[in-house]
Amino acid sequence: MVRLGFIIGLLALIGLLLSGLAAWRVHDQELTIDGIALARAIDVHASLVQDRLTERELLARVASGLFRAPSVMKANMLQPLRSSIYAFKTDFVVASWIARLQPDELQSARSELAAAGFPNPAVRDFDDQPLDTRSLDRPVNVVMDVEPRDTATMAFAGRALDRSPLLGPMLTRAMTDGKPVASDPLPLLRADGPVGLVLAAPVLQDGSDAAAGFVTFSYELAPLMLANDDRSLFSVVLKDPRSNNGELIADERGKVTSRATAEDSPAPSLSRTVTFGGRDWSLGYYAKTNALVRARQTAAIVAAIGTALTGIICGLFGYVTYSNLRLRREIEVRIGFERRLTAVIDELNHRVKNILAVIQSIVTRTLRHGSDIDVARELLIGRIHAMSNVVSLLSESQWQGVNLKGLFEARAIPHADRIAVSGPDIDVSARAAQSLSLLFFELASHSDEGLSLVGKHPNIVARWEVTGEQPNEIFHFRWEESNTSAATRRPDSDFGIILLDRVAPEALGGTSKRYFTEASYVYELTAPMETVIDLTERDRTEALSAPVQRLA
Image: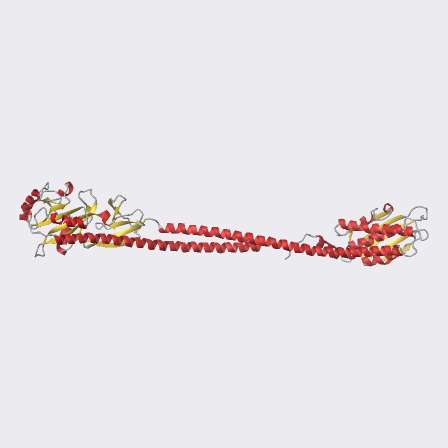
């Protein structure tokens, strides 16, 4: 089981390492894929913005090229271009014609504006304040026509834009460069109007390089550059050219606001540059989702799945392996049981053969030729009964031995109540028990006939002791029948003599002697204790009776 646990632990460790590696790879790939997808989406957006800006700039160039200015003071100069302008693009907020007038032409311009129906035909400053025309010594850029004409746009007619902080420099640069120029972001139509850009294209007089005026188009900044899609991967901002740390951003309603960026503010994920009106505009892109957090979440999911799969695999492996080990253990136990059963059968055959050989010897010796049939029958029954008794005792102890005192029970030998037994508790081996049981029966069966010297039954004392020290201990047994003699005691049978003098001593590996004293009969047996208890036989029997162990 320890080895199985180690293997499962190693598999779990490998699985966790592989899960961690897979999670790391997924984390890295997610970051890379998100980066590529974001970069491609930003490139597409920047390209679309550049195309949109190029189209608007082209419109200004076409409009200025189609413009014919026989008289720059006319207040309906956009009338011939209306159909062309609306056919090309219609998303401008307001288009205007700005005439470049000499100071002496301002009065005529006022008359033209009044005749065109503009509500305030007076030539005035950009902020709608009166203009001191007497102090003018150079041409003035005056709004002479607007499209479309409505209440908000017609209010711009008559305004001079030279001193406007945003539109004045734009017109000067357009006249100098001779190409369309875009203004800085500014509110359109009114102070709180939508933030946008004004694109001015110079209109040249016929046969001259001098600008007669300008065609301008105003566009809202949100649809022009900052169009944000709710489903897009990013939000776009425009670097405010009026401030080093300002950004212009449009909300979901298209309203553009300005915000300042602090030094510790997160930088845009990517930046792109577009060109419009002769200047570069920097677009910043902020990812709407945190790619790092998403990659970590995906990696955590992959790691969790890998861990779960590792647990499932380790569990299945452990279950299958444990089942195989249990099956192997059952097979080994079955094999061990069969081996023990074979050993038990062999041991049983051996012991049965020994018992049958002993019984055969008993029967042969007891029923020898010339024996008295009644006496022989009585002795045969007694001897077989003694053998049966000792086998019963051995069966009760699972053939682990028999207590020596138990061999003197009444069922084992006749007249056991007249025998005085003394000695230490000793468990003798099965082989010694069989020999001693027959020995005790033989001694007791020949002591019950005849009268003693004093006319009483003999007094019998059976005593044993152990002397010496291990492993050289000696077993001493003494049987003494008092008040008897060779004349009164029943003589031993041939079987008894063989048993007393040869079989029992040889079975125990010792010696014996029997003799008469003046008033008793004595039988002594001496044998080594190692043969009396026979640990080898006991160990073999214990091995046969022990539970079956799993094979190594």
